[in-house]
Length: 229
Image 1 (cartoon, rainbow, N blue to C red):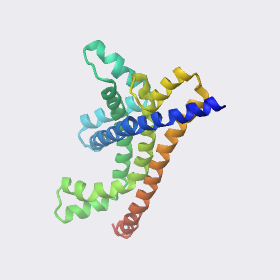
Image 2 (image 1 turned 30 degrees about the vertical axis):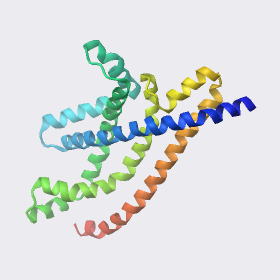
Image 3 (image 1 turned 30 degrees about the horizontal axis):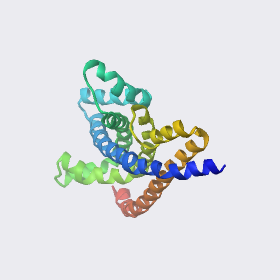
Image 4 (image 1 turned 180 degrees about the vertical axis):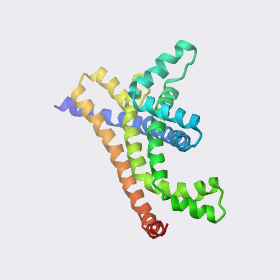
Protein backbone atom coordinates (compact mmCIF):
# COMPACT_ATOMS: atom_id res chain seq x y z
CA UNK A 1 0.00 0.00 0.00
CA UNK A 2 2.94 2.31 0.71
CA UNK A 3 4.17 1.81 -2.87
CA UNK A 4 0.75 2.71 -4.27
CA UNK A 5 0.61 5.84 -2.13
CA UNK A 6 4.03 6.93 -3.37
CA UNK A 7 2.95 6.38 -6.98
CA UNK A 8 -0.24 8.38 -6.50
CA UNK A 9 1.58 11.26 -4.84
CA UNK A 10 4.32 11.38 -7.48
CA UNK A 11 1.87 11.16 -10.37
CA UNK A 12 -0.59 13.79 -9.13
CA UNK A 13 1.41 16.81 -10.29
CA UNK A 14 2.14 15.42 -13.80
CA UNK A 15 -1.60 14.79 -14.21
CA UNK A 16 -2.53 18.22 -12.86
CA UNK A 17 0.14 19.86 -15.01
CA UNK A 18 -1.23 18.11 -18.12
CA UNK A 19 -4.64 19.49 -17.24
CA UNK A 20 -3.35 23.04 -16.85
CA UNK A 21 -1.05 23.04 -19.87
CA UNK A 22 -3.07 20.96 -22.34
CA UNK A 23 -6.59 19.97 -21.26
CA UNK A 24 -7.76 23.44 -20.21
CA UNK A 25 -6.28 25.27 -23.24
CA UNK A 26 -7.69 22.57 -25.53
CA UNK A 27 -11.10 23.01 -23.94
CA UNK A 28 -11.06 26.81 -24.09
CA UNK A 29 -9.87 26.99 -27.71
CA UNK A 30 -12.33 24.33 -28.87
CA UNK A 31 -15.23 25.91 -27.03
CA UNK A 32 -14.52 29.42 -28.33
CA UNK A 33 -14.18 28.29 -31.94
CA UNK A 34 -17.10 25.91 -31.51
CA UNK A 35 -19.31 28.76 -30.35
CA UNK A 36 -18.46 30.79 -33.46
CA UNK A 37 -19.28 27.80 -35.67
CA UNK A 38 -22.44 27.10 -33.66
CA UNK A 39 -23.73 30.65 -34.11
CA UNK A 40 -23.12 30.49 -37.87
CA UNK A 41 -24.86 27.12 -38.13
CA UNK A 42 -27.78 28.34 -35.98
CA UNK A 43 -28.22 31.36 -38.26
CA UNK A 44 -28.15 29.05 -41.28
CA UNK A 45 -30.80 26.82 -39.70
CA UNK A 46 -33.01 29.86 -39.08
CA UNK A 47 -32.37 31.29 -42.54
CA UNK A 48 -35.22 31.49 -45.03
CA UNK A 49 -32.75 30.43 -47.73
CA UNK A 50 -33.59 26.75 -48.12
CA UNK A 51 -30.14 25.67 -49.31
CA UNK A 52 -28.38 27.16 -46.27
CA UNK A 53 -30.96 25.71 -43.90
CA UNK A 54 -30.65 22.24 -45.41
CA UNK A 55 -26.83 22.30 -45.35
CA UNK A 56 -26.85 23.25 -41.66
CA UNK A 57 -29.49 20.64 -40.90
CA UNK A 58 -27.45 17.94 -42.67
CA UNK A 59 -24.28 18.94 -40.80
CA UNK A 60 -26.02 18.78 -37.41
CA UNK A 61 -27.62 15.44 -38.32
CA UNK A 62 -24.31 13.83 -39.31
CA UNK A 63 -22.23 15.13 -36.41
CA UNK A 64 -24.82 14.42 -33.71
CA UNK A 65 -25.46 10.99 -35.17
CA UNK A 66 -21.84 9.78 -35.16
CA UNK A 67 -19.48 9.21 -32.19
CA UNK A 68 -16.86 11.86 -31.50
CA UNK A 69 -14.16 9.20 -31.39
CA UNK A 70 -15.00 8.19 -34.97
CA UNK A 71 -14.80 11.82 -36.08
CA UNK A 72 -11.37 12.16 -34.45
CA UNK A 73 -10.14 9.01 -36.17
CA UNK A 74 -11.36 10.26 -39.55
CA UNK A 75 -9.56 13.60 -39.07
CA UNK A 76 -6.25 12.28 -37.71
CA UNK A 77 -5.92 8.87 -39.35
CA UNK A 78 -8.24 9.15 -42.35
CA UNK A 79 -7.51 12.55 -43.90
CA UNK A 80 -3.78 11.83 -44.41
CA UNK A 81 -4.89 9.25 -47.01
CA UNK A 82 -6.05 12.16 -49.18
CA UNK A 83 -3.06 14.36 -48.40
CA UNK A 84 -4.51 16.36 -45.49
CA UNK A 85 -2.28 16.05 -42.43
CA UNK A 86 -2.83 17.78 -39.08
CA UNK A 87 -0.78 17.63 -35.90
CA UNK A 88 -2.35 15.77 -32.97
CA UNK A 89 -3.34 19.00 -31.20
CA UNK A 90 -4.81 20.61 -34.34
CA UNK A 91 -6.67 17.38 -35.12
CA UNK A 92 -8.07 17.35 -31.60
CA UNK A 93 -9.20 20.98 -31.82
CA UNK A 94 -10.74 20.41 -35.25
CA UNK A 95 -12.72 17.39 -34.11
CA UNK A 96 -13.91 19.01 -30.88
CA UNK A 97 -14.89 22.25 -32.68
CA UNK A 98 -16.89 20.38 -35.31
CA UNK A 99 -18.68 18.37 -32.63
CA UNK A 100 -19.25 21.32 -30.31
CA UNK A 101 -20.52 23.46 -33.18
CA UNK A 102 -23.26 20.97 -34.00
CA UNK A 103 -24.54 20.55 -30.44
CA UNK A 104 -24.25 24.20 -29.40
CA UNK A 105 -25.97 25.39 -32.59
CA UNK A 106 -29.16 23.66 -31.48
CA UNK A 107 -28.98 25.35 -28.09
CA UNK A 108 -28.46 28.76 -29.69
CA UNK A 109 -31.21 28.17 -32.25
CA UNK A 110 -33.68 27.17 -29.55
CA UNK A 111 -32.74 30.19 -27.43
CA UNK A 112 -33.26 32.59 -30.33
CA UNK A 113 -36.59 31.02 -31.23
CA UNK A 114 -37.73 31.36 -27.62
CA UNK A 115 -37.63 35.16 -27.84
CA UNK A 116 -41.20 36.47 -28.41
CA UNK A 117 -41.99 37.70 -31.92
CA UNK A 118 -43.14 40.93 -30.32
CA UNK A 119 -39.47 41.81 -29.81
CA UNK A 120 -38.91 41.69 -33.58
CA UNK A 121 -42.07 43.69 -34.26
CA UNK A 122 -41.24 46.34 -31.67
CA UNK A 123 -37.72 46.74 -33.05
CA UNK A 124 -39.08 47.04 -36.59
CA UNK A 125 -41.51 49.72 -35.42
CA UNK A 126 -38.56 51.64 -33.96
CA UNK A 127 -36.82 51.57 -37.33
CA UNK A 128 -34.26 48.86 -36.54
CA UNK A 129 -32.96 46.82 -39.44
CA UNK A 130 -33.08 43.03 -39.11
CA UNK A 131 -29.36 42.71 -38.40
CA UNK A 132 -29.57 45.48 -35.78
CA UNK A 133 -32.51 43.78 -34.10
CA UNK A 134 -30.66 40.48 -34.06
CA UNK A 135 -27.42 41.98 -32.73
CA UNK A 136 -28.75 44.46 -30.17
CA UNK A 137 -32.06 42.94 -29.09
CA UNK A 138 -32.47 39.23 -29.82
CA UNK A 139 -28.97 37.79 -29.31
CA UNK A 140 -28.35 39.45 -25.89
CA UNK A 141 -31.61 38.02 -24.56
CA UNK A 142 -31.04 34.62 -26.16
CA UNK A 143 -27.54 34.51 -24.66
CA UNK A 144 -28.97 34.79 -21.16
CA UNK A 145 -31.31 31.89 -21.85
CA UNK A 146 -28.61 29.71 -23.43
CA UNK A 147 -25.93 30.18 -20.74
CA UNK A 148 -26.97 27.27 -18.45
CA UNK A 149 -27.07 24.76 -21.30
CA UNK A 150 -23.87 26.08 -22.87
CA UNK A 151 -22.20 25.92 -19.46
CA UNK A 152 -23.08 22.23 -19.22
CA UNK A 153 -21.71 21.69 -22.72
CA UNK A 154 -18.47 23.39 -21.71
CA UNK A 155 -18.02 21.02 -18.78
CA UNK A 156 -18.84 18.04 -21.00
CA UNK A 157 -16.27 19.27 -23.50
CA UNK A 158 -13.61 19.26 -20.78
CA UNK A 159 -14.29 15.58 -20.19
CA UNK A 160 -14.49 14.82 -23.91
CA UNK A 161 -10.90 15.99 -24.31
CA UNK A 162 -9.92 12.64 -22.77
CA UNK A 163 -10.80 11.06 -26.13
CA UNK A 164 -7.96 12.99 -27.76
CA UNK A 165 -5.55 10.65 -25.98
CA UNK A 166 -6.03 8.34 -28.99
CA UNK A 167 -4.38 11.08 -31.08
CA UNK A 168 -1.38 11.12 -28.71
CA UNK A 169 -2.33 14.54 -27.33
CA UNK A 170 -0.58 14.85 -23.98
CA UNK A 171 -3.63 15.69 -21.91
CA UNK A 172 -4.64 14.21 -18.53
CA UNK A 173 -5.74 10.77 -19.72
CA UNK A 174 -2.76 10.33 -22.06
CA UNK A 175 -0.34 11.07 -19.20
CA UNK A 176 -2.29 8.69 -16.98
CA UNK A 177 -1.90 5.92 -19.55
CA UNK A 178 1.84 6.52 -19.75
CA UNK A 179 2.23 6.32 -15.97
CA UNK A 180 0.15 3.12 -15.87
CA UNK A 181 2.42 1.58 -18.52
CA UNK A 182 5.38 2.12 -16.19
CA UNK A 183 3.86 1.40 -12.76
CA UNK A 184 1.34 -1.34 -13.69
CA UNK A 185 -1.24 0.09 -11.29
CA UNK A 186 -4.24 0.80 -13.56
CA UNK A 187 -6.91 0.71 -10.85
CA UNK A 188 -5.48 3.38 -8.57
CA UNK A 189 -4.02 5.57 -11.30
CA UNK A 190 -7.19 5.67 -13.39
CA UNK A 191 -9.09 6.54 -10.22
CA UNK A 192 -6.62 9.37 -9.71
CA UNK A 193 -7.12 10.48 -13.33
CA UNK A 194 -10.84 10.60 -12.64
CA UNK A 195 -10.18 12.64 -9.51
CA UNK A 196 -8.16 15.21 -11.48
CA UNK A 197 -10.97 15.54 -14.03
CA UNK A 198 -13.40 15.89 -11.14
CA UNK A 199 -11.34 18.74 -9.70
CA UNK A 200 -11.38 20.67 -12.96
CA UNK A 201 -15.06 19.94 -13.55
CA UNK A 202 -15.97 21.06 -10.04
CA UNK A 203 -14.15 24.37 -10.49
CA UNK A 204 -15.95 24.97 -13.78
CA UNK A 205 -19.29 24.00 -12.23
CA UNK A 206 -18.74 26.50 -9.44
CA UNK A 207 -17.91 29.23 -11.95
CA UNK A 208 -21.01 28.30 -13.94
CA UNK A 209 -23.23 28.66 -10.88
CA UNK A 210 -21.71 32.06 -10.12
CA UNK A 211 -22.26 33.18 -13.72
CA UNK A 212 -25.86 31.95 -13.74
CA UNK A 213 -26.60 33.83 -10.50
CA UNK A 214 -25.15 37.00 -11.96
CA UNK A 215 -27.05 36.64 -15.20
CA UNK A 216 -30.16 35.63 -13.27
CA UNK A 217 -30.49 39.21 -12.07
CA UNK A 218 -30.70 40.32 -15.70
CA UNK A 219 -33.29 37.64 -16.42
CA UNK A 220 -35.45 38.98 -13.59
CA UNK A 221 -35.08 42.46 -14.99
CA UNK A 222 -36.11 41.19 -18.42
CA UNK A 223 -39.23 39.51 -17.06
CA UNK A 224 -41.64 42.45 -17.13
CA UNK A 225 -40.38 43.51 -20.54
CA UNK A 226 -41.13 40.08 -21.92
CA UNK A 227 -44.61 40.08 -20.49
CA UNK A 228 -45.34 43.47 -22.03
CA UNK A 229 -44.06 42.22 -25.38
